[in-house]
Length: 379
Ligand code: NIG
Ligand code: FE
Image 1 (cartoon, protein in one colour):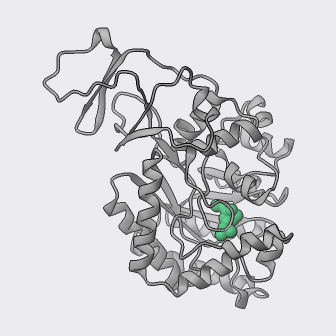
Image 2 (image 1 turned 180 degrees about the horizontal axis):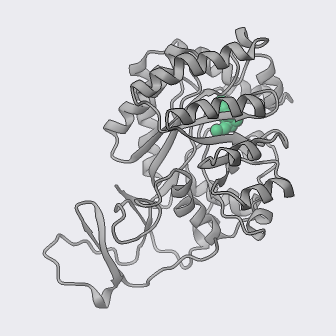
């Protein structure tokens, strides 16, 4: 977690969008290629944002003010606000408008250095709206120059008409949503919000088992609101990642240590909801790797600037600057299953790079908080 290699005065050769060589400037080969002088700048791997809800209809500034007046996120959700509020608005918006809005958000995220991105559904919660969201994500994959992965999150919340009949909604997910999503190849992964007041461990287990039949590997929302068993069910299903983890005890850490599931902290949502931060220091000291992501969404984390995520992780999750760097690059790529092509400057990987101004030290990157340090982003 705490090692980042760097070369002062280096060259980097890109051919057909792939890093084909790099090393000290003294060893720079004669090249017929176009060259650019990066003197005085830093060249680093692009960020991977492994957890976002980038497709949504509108902001939830009204709930933000309700929270400022003293209501909690859970109270607002229990009254039919929160995710259900976003679902109502998304149901009323056409696919084209949703696409155009998400496209704009994505361009801004790219300008901040995001060169690979996960986007979840989960503001649909009906067959038609979930498909609509996933088609928007598919179109973003086709039109944006970065790598995008789609995650099906039909199990984000129970629509109010299923409040007292959870099984009927889960049946809808399993019998109607999953087969159509698979037929149209709309999802790469499957997610469940496994937490207090949302999906139980048993319900999560059932949905993940069905998802696996379509080859959808799990990326779980777990342990945001309590020690709810999200980690255990994620590990049981060999989930690619388990995300949030504001509540993690020794038992959860031991489960993760014996797994190939990447834990992902989301400091932006802890900051915005004023809830505990994932105990990253403790987890890393016990030998775990960690990724961090923006969780960009209108309810709990309306931000996509991963430089700020990095600063929060250092100040409040107890991470060191080098650990934050790895958490945003190679470990985040791992949490998205794209570590063979993204997340580091490695021969053969995609030349998705951030060019920054000169810093005296890598520690300065999270130190100058809330800024976008990317002068240029190459994808
Ligand atoms: O990652 N925790 C669950 N889902 C989202 C929030 C969704 C919302 O409030 O709109 C999250 O925080
Ligand atoms: Fe999320």
